[in-house]
Length: 305
Image (cartoon, rainbow, N blue to C red; front, top):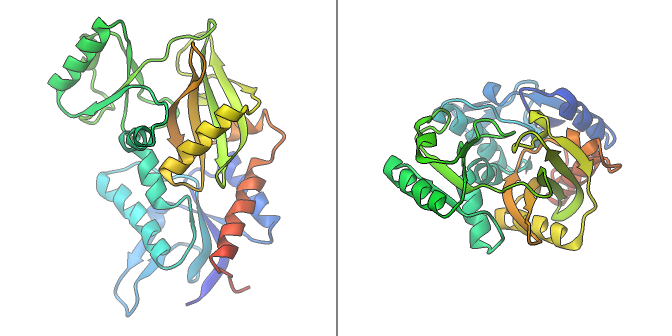
């Protein structure tokens, strides 16, 4: 089977990240090509199944997943089916679609972290409104506030604070599922969370995101990014989270606790790193490319040139 020497970068919005990846791939002598997952398709009419990617003649030498757009359940499944099919055909997918499925679904991420006995905030997930109301009533009676998050989502979109049962009445963005997590209060007068970038099982860089005006500290929502030294405990927790998910690389989000230590809130399989790159001297795209091509070489995926 013909292997096209180019690398498919799956994205609908290449932007800064796409340019950095293309440059990093070029340093390895490979050309990266942007491909929308919405344009990929399965052709099962011939003797052998085919996955058709625009701009490619045959299988790509590798696939780097930078983004999969939302859509109907059927559309998202088909986009992941194309990645799964390429993987079944021997193409290296980075990150693997199984890992993407685990992390896009916050409930499964939380389950895997809890099963691995890693520190993560108390979390409840249900469909029933009456069950959600009972959880909120009980936790608020204990003096806790909760955060409701869409099961699928990123960059703080659709996340809201739950301080009383009436706050559940706005169901916008929840899609019929209540993912409720204990709210982490201010620390030293400001809201703060940490992002640790893990590649090939090793924590390589970290930053602190802070805000004095809002509890959502994502850079996309105006949070400030500051350089953060990787202490041993922080690195170990982030690396353990990546092992629990079984993923090639990830952005692990943690929050420092008042009494010391950290709690893991999310593991991102398609993490942005522009904010982190602004506060670290490590070339993150280059590190990703190094690991990517190490894996392709180990798998014997040598493209014809």
